[in-house]
Image 1 (tube, rainbow, N blue to C red):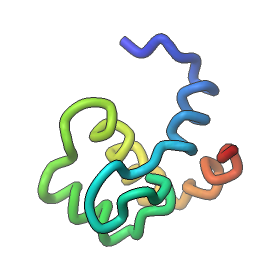
Image 2 (tube, rainbow, N blue to C red):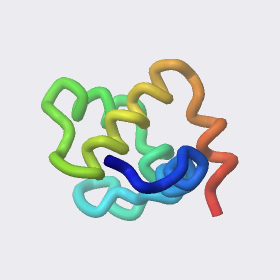
Image 3 (cartoon, rainbow, N blue to C red):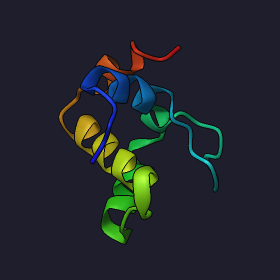
Length: 73
């Protein structure tokens, strides 16, 4: 279970960066949509990174990524 409040988690999501690959260092929320969709079909990584990427997918799917971008430090 996640011990962070919803607000803290959203701030963490907004500031999370891709740790590997072609887009290493990019904020997850700024990853290109085609890349997130590719991971959706391939399978997201295990653990918190995969969970955050799945949430970014849902945000992008619903056009809500700008709400998260406003939380970046």
